[in-house]
Image 1 (tube, rainbow, N blue to C red):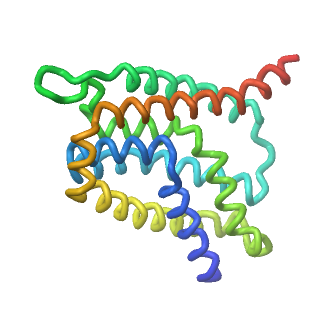
Image 2: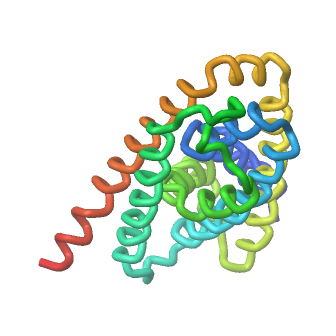
Length: 212
């Protein structure tokens, strides 16, 4: 396979990971509050979602149009409900007696796994990112080359994850977070709620329209 095509796939994956969204916001909170090990655990869990969405994006780009659109509409609705739940919890966050915020992630690995799979930016952003960068190479895309493209994307995911782990572990970042933790968590909650309504707006018309 053309090395340029593999490089483009890796770049698309890296940009996808770094693009601001619910996962990046959650990672900044986890890494700044608990350090790089917790941030790394979150990203290890979230990687499963990254691979899932990249796989579906490549599936759609290469030409598989047989998947029922209601599958993605229903998935978007579930994602939106989960994000709304996270957002409400964050908005209502308070400091506990020991000074920590009561919505702090106790199990970053599990949180990363769940958020990675339910991330509403996952499929649409992955499709947009890979389509934009692979459009000029559409003639070279094939089912046989899909596994290699996904492997290249995995490399991009890992490199971007390493960068984010480094970023969230910086002393300046952690000090800023600890000083303004409650308000950062609440602001993040409002963003999560906004993302949930975005997911509802994208999925409900398709579900209701197809029922009619």
